[in-house]
Image (cartoon, rainbow over the protein chains, first blue to last red):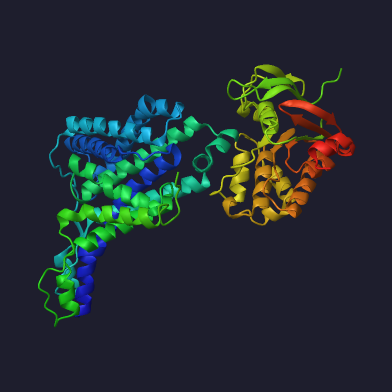
Length: 335
Length: 236
């Protein structure tokens, strides 16, 4: 019984939250890695683009709610998501026209592109705050739980409860669908293969008649779809606050680099690695230890790091990977 | 007068201020194998790049099948029937052999399965590895994929920049055999080679370039027999 209780506690506080968080990071890291593979720079504006896409989605949710349109028990945000993606994609393609295309034509060094993206980040930062403000916003209407603690206890008779929130299930399902669609697109369609070819060998791709402007446009649109989805899922799961989205850039980059920049499969794996490390290191293990080793009475909470330091985990992972395996676990590009 | 199939005459140009090519002329007839040889820094690869439009020419004219293509970009020249295999970075390493060939046919709107089969018939070794990533293949097989990729547009002129660089002598002979086979189907070949002796053996016409200008032009056999060419360029 104690082992079961320990297992349920582990699932409830570590595995399920980390899986949902990992899925959100994976979607974010996929966008970063695609942009790196095709446009050859690390896009620092990614976190704030995520905030912008989510802000648009929230505005659309409010409009839909005001009109009395919903898809209960599912959150209205899912209904608003496609339109939010379209608007974010429009903004990203326009940003590329206005900013990045210039540097691409100059054949600027990647670091110049990175600096340009920092500028875009600040612009996007301000734009989002003007649009929706700086406060915390919750927009997760619809049913809250798929399985609640009380229900779980009643079914199993265990003393520990297990909660499965709807936002977590939606996150995992949507992420699985998005990854499937992305990998299908990259591996099966003509445009997807052209993107991979362009990422592999730009000169040879041009020689083969692949249109670089089209590849770049498709990349921004896909990145917009991934980043808006990631932002909306993160917002549903936790809450929306522009500053948090800026901060999440760090674990997203850590995920992309752990997996190997430019490698989509690596980005997904990296997202889960970072999320599970972060949750495992900041979770107080005392309760689980109590079930497994009843005779042991530890003095502390058995928490390696307090949650305020969770970003340190991303930093440590980044440093370790860059020191020992700079191309990432899945051998991305190292330019 | 009947014009050669590819005619690049009086080419003069370079990357900076100094000209690398000084009145260089290269012509290839239909189905012929033409080989450019010469010492290091003679402008062999540059001459080929000029034919393909990767080098701005100050003087000279390039015609293909009688049509003046001097002003066209490399991409447009591919559309006119040129195929180019660069010396390095000539495959998509993370893509499969089959995908590499598909990318070669990217501009084709028609059904290219027949061409794909022809390439596989030509290179059975890579046909067996069609699902494998091109970057995992041996040097010789990579070159076969690179040549195959260029063949997918069904070019009438195939240009190869040092196709045997860095491969073993056995693989080199094998590759030259394939090149002869390609030429027999009516495709003209223009090739830059370091392995001058072996390349001239299969050449219908050979160009010996020195300092960006034609020094000797003759059939491959005649160049191999010429005592001066042998002494200065082929090591005796």
